[in-house]
Image (spheres, rainbow, N blue to C red):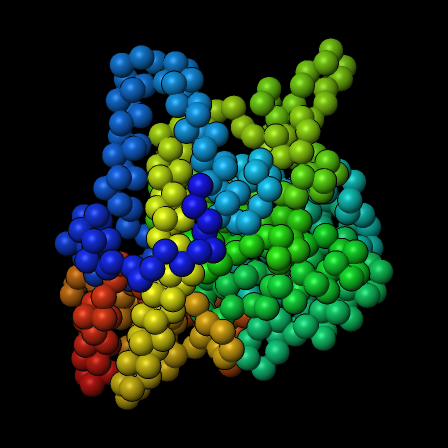
Length: 406
């Protein structure tokens, strides 16, 4: 097992591009949406589908049981977690739902309590909090942001000390702009206050080092399709083993619980209670290959390359008259958001696509607390990964420049 925190050396970008067929046909700067997979990842999935075709689904799953176990071990290594404390799921949102509702059904949220959130919260996480509040009588307490856009740690500490907080739900990197929240400091404050800490790491795992032990979170969730370069329909859920005993996740079956008799059941111990029976085995195998690839490259090396490209893109965009970058101050990630004077984000995306460049659009409904005046409610989002080149960034800047000039 490769330690994800070890820098394996500078990334061989040419080799990574050769292993990624999509690089030959498109400039893919939408990695915060879904990254391009390697040939090896895709082959692992297709190979297993062929195995199911020839020997049957249950039998094929049994034949790769060791590889599915290895996926969990690799994921634990990636997150700095104890082996067995990470399970594969269908998405970040599915991971979040299992953990949040497990906490609520475990009787850990009641009337008058606060669920703490930050202003860069993503819609599916915040909507989950709202839904839990409807049924428990709890309310959401939103912590203000500091001047640089990150969470105000002093305000957070005050809220945590109120004695009313049931949990803190904090976002590592917002999906709508590139700032990075000080999540280790959040973890320290939560430990002092004795408040459970749920971390949205959907936009950080795979591009930045994430060590759940160091961060002090009780729960962390992510997806496979973004910076990990895994397939869609996959995700990861970390739950600290001792904390998992307090959770009663919904949607249980024979893998997550034991049926004792006609009137009784019991959850399986620790994180085993979050394991589903019916899962996309082929996709999970692809996710395992993608995680092992990231581990082999080294997360620190990935972070260095992604950070270099994102900073270069910000600098080049800001040098274009009429372009404004909206990522905030402090540490920033591989997400670069901007607007072009005189051109709507939809127009920028359309023209970029015509030039063979993939970007996306961030809109207010995805991050409604933060995308308010004076911030734009719609922005272009570009997100380079380590397999992108500076020449590809220049192509996007040329597109933007043509619109700004026009």
